[in-house]
Image (tube, rainbow, N blue to C red; front, side, top):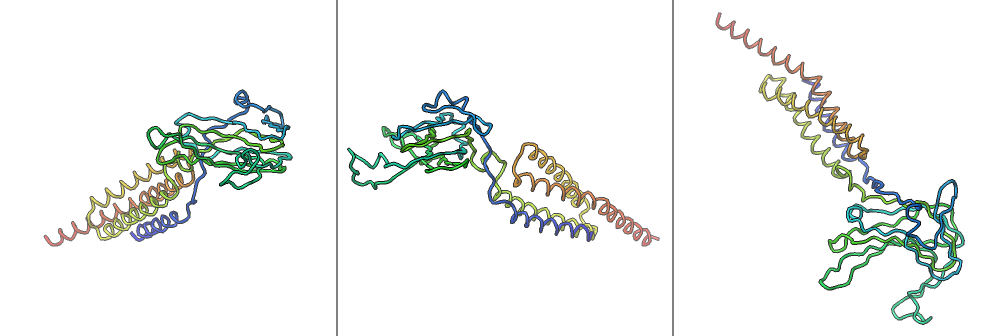
Amino acid sequence: MKTMLQAAMMLVFTSIGLAQDLPVTSPGKVLQVFDWKELTGAVTNGQIVSLDGMDVLKITNAAGTPLVITLLEITNATLMEKAGTFICEIKYEDVEEGLSKQTLSNGIPTMGWTVGYRGGEMKLAEYFPPQALGGDDEKSTSENLFSGSSNWTPLTVRAFHKLGGMPPKKLQLELYLQAAGTVYLRPIKLLGIPGSSNWWTSQQAGLIGGIGGSLIGCLGAMTGILGSKGRARGLVLATVKVCIALGLILLAGGMTALVLKQPYAVYYPLLLGGFILTIVFSVNLPSIQRRYDELEIRRMTSEDALRS
């Protein structure tokens, strides 16, 4: 029974450690990769070229006047609901800065605007239904600026996902070149919202591991104490067998999570809890049964001695 108590304590402390050591975040999964060969018909002022052994989109602003190009337009409600971050590896050469068009009115800075210079800009525009009946569509944007020259570097823009509780009706990824410059774009990856396709988040995993592990540890301690004293035989044996069955279920769930490529915060608690439950309670079940049998034989021997 001492082994059972030690195993129960080990399960408690391991679960508490699990709650503290799990990664804080898990990256979103790749929902879709947008290949330029499939999008080239929708992208104007661009051409597909082979660069570094890969087909990339080349955009050149030779005129030096502001250039706006729509790279992607998404209206699929299911895809927009899961959309988290757009990532595109970009290489640019001699991207010049120019006076932002929105700051000028007939060549003169407008009231309420600050004159500013911009080079290149990757912008994600999200269009939402009007929040009031008869109103105009709402628009939210996130952007990432660049200028000068650079070798391949990731450029990311993140979706707000909701505005006033409403999902977007359209996502539009745009490239701005305020002045002259050349830009090369590799295929765009759309990542889902971190944890959106996972069974649970890392924070929830820590909570499950801490609470669930502590409860199972208490059950282990209870069976160890009652078994050593020979009490509640039916309850103890039933509890041990249930814990073994639960351990096998958790192991199966952990293996399934691995096959489905769930993150560490999902499969690790399942495998750890399943392994401890199955091994600890399976190893101790024969000794618990033997202890009850020994105590039963002693009781019957004692009763026979009293009768004689």
